[in-house]
Length: 373
Image (cartoon, rainbow, N blue to C red; front, side, top):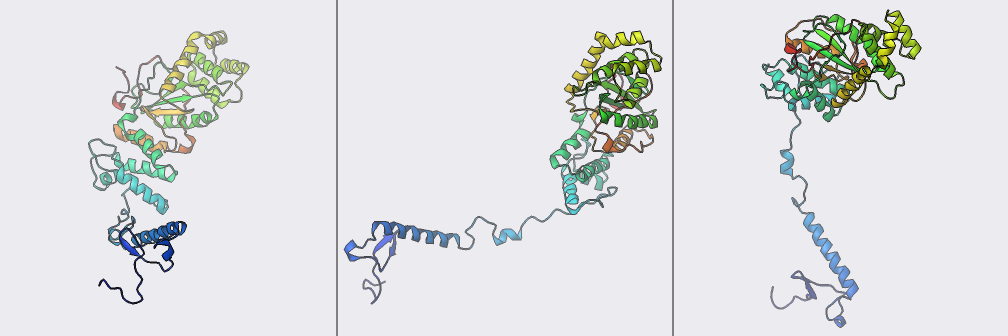
């Protein structure tokens, strides 16, 4: 620009960040300056206009650019696995299930690929298809991802197997049975009462492959639970535990001492010995020992059951759980039809007689579910 200003052009009054600024309202009397208040306002206004012009320009914001939108991550492909029926799932549930089976590793440490890949490629892990179905049930039941992952690991991860010693507890079934079910129960617990006949049926249908073990876990909120447990132990000492077990669960609203005495007489027990054993220190010790074991295993209530050392998740299907155990150990027993998972928050058993003290460990592999080292 020439040193001479064009006619009508305004001369610079002051500069802001090196740029000339003109304003017709500037007064010569002020020496080319705005009044202090108005000057501050004017500077702020101009600064804001400058910022707006900067942030309004193309490609200057922190949002995704057009180029980024073009490369936006595409939705994960739909997962379909042969042998898994997902027709009952909503679109959202199917998406969640597909995501989980595409991320959770297969149950076999020798096959370190996602469950879905294991099934699709027919990898050498027979647990992959049951694992996919297991995750499916969790999704259908509305479980969160964390809940499903925790349950999945509890069912399939090697760390999910707990050491649950039988240690002289009442046992029903073959000593060499490949599947051991250990139940912690309270004779006054209504849920335990509901589960008892279901587990009876399960053991009967798998009598050659399953043995039932009972642990005494009376809860403080049930006023008759302790004396009922004592009565069962006293009956065990006379070889009639499972008979008393069945009677107590069938009469949960009648557990006063007079009721227990009546049951003892009906079972042909020696009543004086029955009374003495109920009050014996050894009886209290047995209950305390089982209770301590339950606390160590972090059980949250009754009934709670362990199948070959794994805590059974009552939201799962017991039939499928047992079938998978049989598959893992190479047996081909019948499926325990008619045992709904909803009835099992974990559960009991009935009938039979007390077994002699044993150091068998339900957490051992099925092939050596006996001797504890």
